[in-house]
Length: 219
Image 1 (cartoon, rainbow, N blue to C red):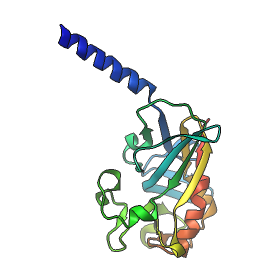
Image 2 (cartoon, rainbow, N blue to C red; image 1 turned 30 degrees about the horizontal axis):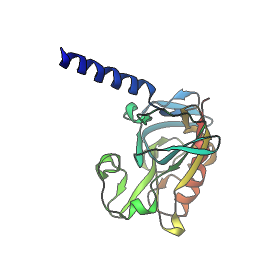
Image 3 (cartoon, rainbow, N blue to C red; image 1 turned 60 degrees about the vertical axis):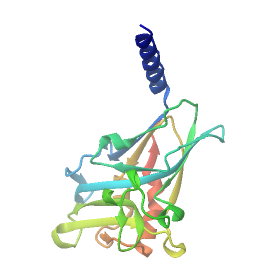
Image 4 (cartoon, rainbow, N blue to C red; image 1 turned 135 degrees about the vertical axis):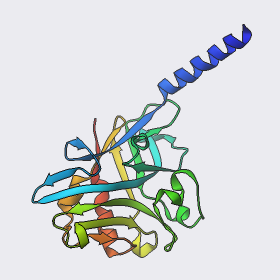
């Protein structure tokens, strides 16, 4: 009987703890829709198909009335459009907040600290082995305006050296729901000119400068 009581108490504690956990959802979107990979989007004068989207959210910090109330224990979270569970960041404890700050990408210290596991595992396809550095933001697909072979574009945005630093910070007032408006990137970048950015470069820096504007609060 004592074992059943103890198990019941532990289950109730776990259940209450889970219900009270703080959750942030980062939802990739294209215009008003949740992003669907390999779907044809007719956008302005372009026909787009997004086949791959990933990005890092790191150093996530929560604020209430401009004071820090919590910093995420997990240093970096990989948002991967092939895995909807990756859109949710769960802190496993409860606190009130009205604003968050985070980085898009991985900081320079992490880049030079060797190989990691989990979300930072190179097997996730977000690490340049030849460059010894992480890709902060990756978007791939096809565009009717792209002059490359089979109209394919590749935007692999990374770089941590001072001249090509692509880490960017975002601050948002939010109730826990954030959209990543990928369509906005195609409004601001001429894909007929910038369709293959796959290394630290001036082009990567220019695209990185536009990334914070993609993140919008849904409150």
